[in-house]
Image 1 (spheres, rainbow over the protein chains, first blue to last red):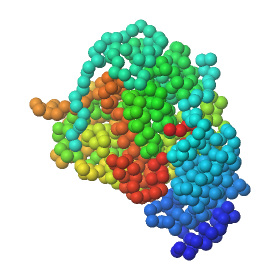
Image 2 (tube, each protein chain N blue to C red):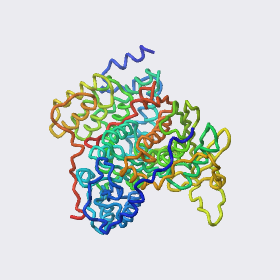
Image 3 (tube, rainbow over the protein chains, first blue to last red):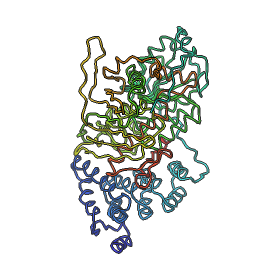
Image 4 (cartoon, chains in turn purple, blue):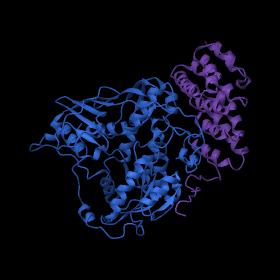
Length: 179
Length: 444
């Protein structure tokens, strides 16, 4: 079993390896991802649900092989050529399930304005040194308007950050009611 | 498992009842902010955050109280401008209107807030309100994650505020009778079996653009971003797992609240949680349609079950002069070593079976706390510092039951819970799901 896991892990998950996974629940990822990205919204919603169940099962205690295989199968769907909603959903599945092996693919999304906040939250949740290092790197290189978000994640992970105080109590949205 | 609560202290209330003054919307006091035990007759200045269905009911109630001089409604707030306009109209346009609740919190003159926003906002807004020194009435369920709940308890303690969670079943007249009956007649309770009808299936509409009056970003708040869909709101957030969590979290926060209160197990949690159920096959709503959960408690040993739909106990027939059981579709059976007891409802409608209502305590019987009403009990907490009947620790514990049931269902496995540390143990994925990253800046 260990040998089966080693081979796909040695490849770059962004290179496209979903078809290559030969075992267990990971085989279900491809058809479900296709349904999620398809034109039928009802089928897409059912696919999201099924993917979450699949990730839940793969994350059970003692099922390290299933977990690794599902993470491996999911990660290629973060690629830029995949539909945005699929990528967003995969980010959150990986946030529940993945370890350091997928951090590079997740961190790559921090540069995309429409997905960077989901990627930040995923990195905040994924434990380990790799995700923390990715957040540190992100903070150093983030545009000014995104630095407070990353600073928040770093603080959540126990890192002291200079500047960029939390804006969580700062009101910004006015109303015309009663004006 | 006798109740730990004593009999009611009525100090201050007689004075308060006679303190009505003539300017219900007059300049607010700020007297009670940050938890001082101030004079019972002084007016509390309120703001209402979230003025939809339940929020409007609270606003009506508070306006009625303001006419008696007990409170002043200084502000209303909602992410929906139509609702906001309507709410402001209810105050004769005297209350200030805000879309962003943080404008409310920065006002030093506001003593207390009623939070009746969608469930995914409860944790963040309660913590923020506490940090700003406001007393809080927050609708149930108290929180959506374990982390939120712990943060709420810590923030309330740190800032010495009074919090009442809106599981108002504990304050109903027949809840008092049920509580008293159980303590005196059931002996050791070994099982409480809750039943509730199924969660609905729905949300078949495609995503679209939010209506112009709705600030969708603010409505989502801490939740991850997603396109607007009219199946999310108003009210239907209840059927979304990330927000309302279905019937088990919506009404479970009522029925199981009564169960923990009557059995005197506030402060205790289960050691295992095991759920099975059925998710909807179609639609946007993703909460379990059917779900059965078994919670096992130790020291003392007892079992709490949530069965959705389970086996409802038919409503008893009542005499014409008795309060009718309006919602018999949910409730609980209490099994003790000496007797059993049925309670229907558990929220604003709580009904005890006939033998409970007709029981007359003999000499030497134990009495239990009789709530003056859920809101009044909160006001007592604000005025005197007394613990509220559904204080934040108790409210969070009940929400944890609901959350853990859903988590066990979602994960498809039994969870082991450390009730002292309030943590899942032995399951890395489940532990990760005790919290949920939040969209900045709508964060704890």
